[in-house]
Image (cartoon, rainbow, N blue to C red):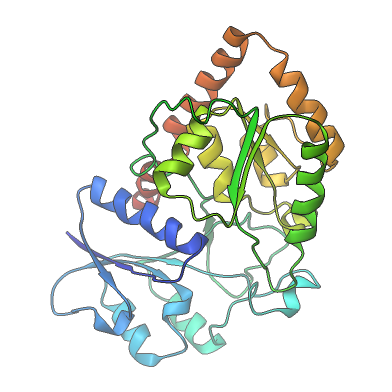
Length: 303
């Protein structure tokens, strides 16, 4: 059956999340079509829909499109969020109460979010299912590359601004501790690496590093896509402490201290090659079994 998913041209995390889901729906056998505006969808034929609440923009016509879907999976934002972040529109739903109430009456609409649904943050919406981010196993196909095997630990990312620009300071502090450690660090920030370069770097480095935003560290409700990408490609992750990550991957050692992260890294690197390889293989298999976008789509279909 036909399924519509939004096409985003905005560079950033959402673009890659979207791409991961698009390929996973194709893999599941759906006839996938992309739209830039939900009003472009042809509602005269049967269709399924994966939409984001931003598509609604409080337009009655958008609600009409959703009402005609065979089944719709809509990503929604919380109705309230802890301060100070909840004062910024990045964290709270922009959908009006009237449209929320209408959507709540649609039995064919399934609501989901990447955050753990705690503290009644989604109190205006009907049931919201937590669907964490995942590894795009259909895009990231690594190749062995000795160029990148020189690195003890690697990181690929950008200076993400959450609206309060809190992450840059965390990143600088973390990277500084690693650089002072004399470890061979392959840190690429805003370097424009291709997908294949990033894939091969993470796969061939001995370890990978992850850094989260301030709100993720404080609240622990979600973890970034780099968590799944690093474990899926490399198998060994050194990361700061975040609640959802620790729940999903309890065997991953974490710390909010950049100095302790360096120490954890050195302890991992002191393992024998076989010990390290065995742990990596187990972690990679766990990602393939449970935490790919293919698996996320399978879960959505069952809702």
